[in-house]
Image 1: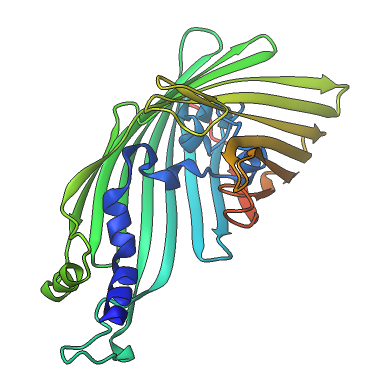
Image 2: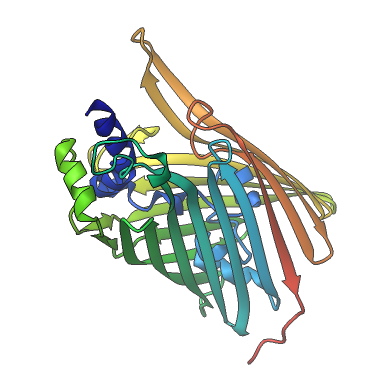
Length: 360
């Protein structure tokens, strides 16, 4: 019976975790980030973003594609390759003042053993009864950007559809909205990005066999019930400035503040009303062809076993190369700190497609 308890617990853990997830950490796969350029700058990017990836970071930045069509692709792996993260996007100018973009994100863990039916009706262990399943999160974004008549002001929004699936056991459909703005003032750029501005709602449903439910009851596990998971709004604020050193060398510096209003979080600036998570990014460029990037973020503190207060932070680095209309970027980054998951190598590709004459 003890073995039966163990196998049932392992097989049902991921389902129970989904059901018990706190609203403040809902849809966390959408907070990892996309594009090696941004990841190398520790996600300090909502202000300087000016390409197809703006559909994710700040849809107002889509105006930066000029008269081009752009596509972007990215692949990365986390937790020693267990979790795979993929991203693709396309953007095109509609007319002289507006741009449309679409983005697709997949974060998944595949080939997870399902041991809930390892024990047959006679109480015997039968390894042939082990099957596998995937736990996959999908995000589909449709973004629109508009240049306003106010000089230097760009606005945009994204509608996102979310599909989360845990094998045949559980699944959720979700919907949410993002809204953003960028403002150019002399040599400065400022930005605001409201993520999940109306809150994002995931409706979960579960499909458990009677045998699986019986195992849950026998092992003292709670049977998950259909419900709604809410992702609360978050406000991101940023400022950036580009410095020129002659005609060949440039430096872009950006500081972002991620503001949450769902209680105290383990970030640098925190209170019961609001928590602020700062991150800074730098990008040095040579002839707009070669780029070196660095960033610092995820500043947290914890108490070690000896009672000493420890402060940690996550440095990221990256490089990029532009060859005519092709951009190849690389970042050495992580979704947490090195004690949680090893640093990952992230590559992304961006291509400018033929110039498109804007409609008047």
